[in-house]
Length: 196
Image 1 (cartoon, rainbow, N blue to C red):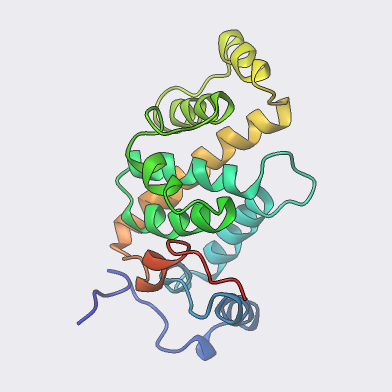
Image 2 (image 1 turned 30 degrees about the vertical axis):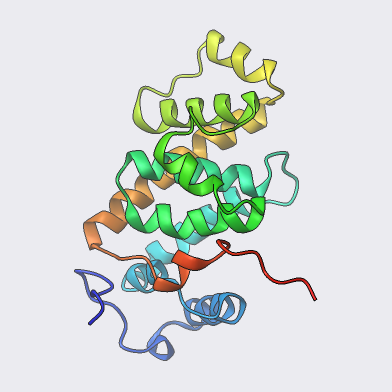
């Protein structure tokens, strides 16, 4: 028997939800093949669902961006691991594997990015993300110099800090609700697809 999706009410059917939320869930289901549990967990508060995913998409899906999708997801995995958020480590770990095309990277980033085979750019990025997500997070002159030296811009620095902060909130909500990761996430991106 699988774990409940949330300690709070979840919709009995996505067809009972407001049209925009139902459409968002159906779109992700069509793309991924399933509805991620976090969608169902947040759906009992439609206004918060909308606000959450609007900010999520503004950070993670923005077109004119210099951080890659893999880099953004690495930030999520590193900070979520330190926040002990199983859902986000597993779900976003799948996205790290897919976007990076590296089946080992997500686990290495989750456990200890400092000993993973990362570039200096990625090591500094994750050091700063953890500083923003778990410590003071002030952009000091020393941090700015360090980040500029490995090629980050002011916009990148904002994104790193904002992603760490946003997913800190997400980590806490998922933990509060006791939302487990969908089983589908565990295997995504671990075994390369056969090329035909």
